[in-house]
Length: 112
Ligand code: AMP
Ligand code: ZN
Image (cartoon, rainbow, N blue to C red; front, side):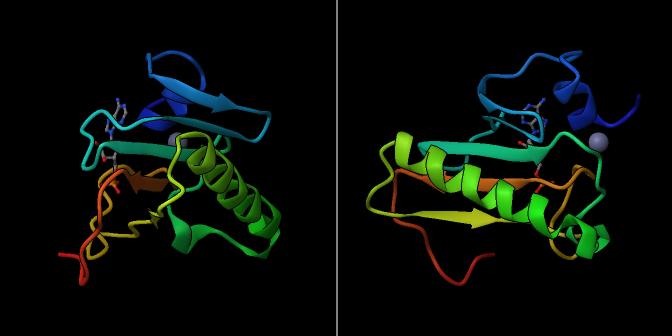
């Protein structure tokens, strides 16, 4: 199994796990860009948001729900940012759909 995040989901590569259920996994980003920076992924492999279909609507809702609940648990009451980099121009470097959740500092806009 080549995909890095599939291997993390399978437990083949260690990660600092924050949450796990039958559909999703959340773990700390290895190169944090904010005081709090974690990723929420589906256990099922989907290349990117572009590859998600209508059949994945429920899963996408679940991932955002997990992100929101974990943000609350991580004391991000002042706010946070959820990012889904998609494709080369979107800055995606790992081709397994993932939500970035960033917080603990004020975010800037526009993003780079
Ligand atoms: P993206 O550039 O949106 O595809 O995001 C990929 C993210 O995965 C980056 O923020 C990386 O720091 C993060 N990352 C890469 N390898 C690992 C790993 N082994 N464990 C945790 N996060 C990782
Ligand atoms: Zn994968």
